[in-house]
Amino acid sequence: MNSRQRILGGGVQHVLDYLRRMRSENPAFFYAVQDDNGSSNGNIFWADATARMNYHYFGDTIKLDTSYRANCYSVPFATFTGLNHHAQPVLFGCAFLFSESETSLVWLLQTWLQAMSAQKPVSITTDTDHLIQMAIAHVLPETRHRLCKWSILRDTKEKLTHVCQTHPTFEIEFMKCINEAETLEEFESQWKSLLERYYLTDNEFLQSIYIARHHWVPVFMRETFFGDFLSDEDNDAKNTFFDGFVNASTSIQLLIKHYEKAITIWHEKEFNADLDSNNTTPILKTPSPMEKQAADLYTRKVFMKFQQELVETLANPATKIDDSGAITTYHVAKFGEEHKAHTVRFNTLELTANCSCLMFEFSGIICRHVLSVFRAKNVLTLPSQYILKRWTRNAKTGGGGTIEENPLELPSNSQESLTMRHNSLRQEAIKFVEEGAKSIHSYNVAMNALKEAAKKVSAAKKKNTDKTQVTNMVNGCNQGVDEGDIDQADSGQSKGTSGEEEGNEEAQQDPVDKESAMMIAEEPAWYPLEVQPLDNMQNTEGRKLLDGQLKRLSL
Image 1 (tube, rainbow, N blue to C red):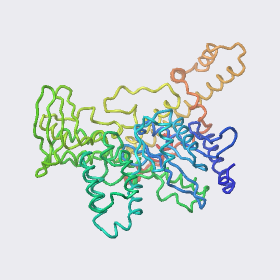
Image 2: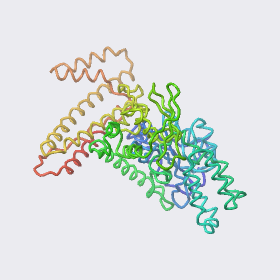
Image 3: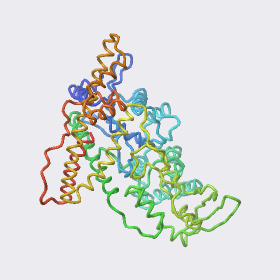
Image 4: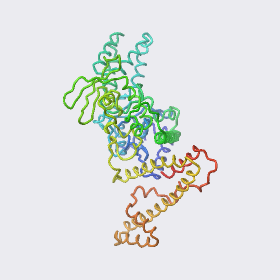
C-alpha cells in the first residue's frame, strides 16, 4: 500500500467494496487493481456494462482526461470518454491513479483496452503530460494522438500574460492563426509573421508548442476522425462527463455517489435526445431530397449541422477547373472570397468526392463544398459511404462504419450478444412509449401489453434457469448422463398444451448464455404494477409512466 492509499484509508476500501458489489450484481461489470509482482500500486480501473457497450458503437475517438483531482490529497481521477450519436459525452471507463508513473499509465491503457475487447480507437485526445504521451506511444502506437488544445491555449495565456496585457491584439491574432489556417503553408506563414511582429521568435514556450504542432493544431489533424463539428471552439473543454460532479473537495466516498449521479443524468439526456430524434420532425429549409433523407437518418443534433452545410451551398457555387476522364475537379468558394477556394475531386463512376478542407474525414459530416459539387452533378441523395452510422438514429444497432448495413446478426461472444439484445429492445421501447402515450386508450392498451409481456419474460427466464440448473448438475456430477438425456427430460416436462410445447422448443433453440444466466433473479424487479385505467391523463404524463416501465423492462 503506497502513501496515498495509507492516507486515504477507508476511502480506498469503500471503492473496492463498491466495485466488488457491482461485479456480483452484473458479471459484465469490469474492474482491476494494479499489482506488480505482489507490490500493489493501488491503481484502480473500472468500466460498467453500459460503458463497454457504448464503446462498441462509439469507440472510434476517445479522450483520456487525468485533470480531475479527488479530495485534498489530489488523487487523480482519470476518465475515458467519447461522443455518442447526439454528440453528447459518453463514458468508457474510470480510474483512480494512486501512482502516476509511466508504468502505471501503461497498465491503465492496457487494462482499459482489455475491458474494451482489445478494440483500439482511431484517435485519442489527452493532456499534455509527457508520461501519458510515452504510454500511448507504447500501448496505442497506431492510434492518432492529439494533445488537448484547450489545455495548450490555457497555458499560453498563463505563460504570455505580460504579452497579452501589453498587446491586446496578440491573443486575437494567435487564435486566428491556430483556428483559421486552412493549409499547412498558411499556418506556417501566419505563425512566423506573428512571432516576428511581437518579437517572440526566441520565446521558449512558443518554441515548445510549435515543435508539437502536429499533435494539436487543427490543420495538422484534419485527415483523422475526431468527431468535432459543434463549433470552431475546442470541444475538449465542453464535452466533459464529470464537470460539476468532481472537484478538489470531493472525498473518495462521495465521488462514487457523484459518479453514479453523473451516469444517471447523462443516460437521461441520451434517452430524451433519442425520443426527440425518433419522434419529432425537424423543419426543412430546402426542397432537396437529400435534406429529407438526412432528416430521416441523422440524430437531431447531427442533422442540424448537416442542414447548415447544405444551406451554405447556395452561397458556395462549384466551378469546374478540370475534367480528366472519370475525375472532375472543382473549385468551391463563397461569393467574394474566391481566394479561399477549396478543391473538390469528384469521381463520376463511383459517386465519391474528396475535399481539401477534410471536414468529412475529421468530423464525419460532409462539407458544403462536396455538397455543392453534388448539386452541380445532380446527385440528389447522399451516397451511403458519406453517412457514418455512429451519427444516425440507429447507431446502437449492429456494427459501426457507414450506413451500408448488413442484416443484423447477434455476435457469438456472450457479452456482445447481451449488448445487442439490450439495444434492440431499447430501440423498440422508445417507439412503444411514443405510440402508447398518444391517447388514454392506447396508454391503457400499452400498459396491459407490458404486464402480459412481463409475465412471459418471467416464465422464459424461469425455464432457462431450470435448464441451466439441470445442466450445471450434469456437468458437476458427470455420472453418465449425456445431453440427449437432458433433452429428453426437458421434452417430457413440456408435454401438455401445444402452447407449452412451443415455449419449450423456443427455449431449446435459444439457450441462455452463461453471463445472462448469472444475472437471472428469482423475482423480476421490473415487474409492472397493476394497471390503473386513466380517465384524464396528459400525453406527457403517460409517456413518463411508460418510460419508467420500459426502462425497468429493458434492464
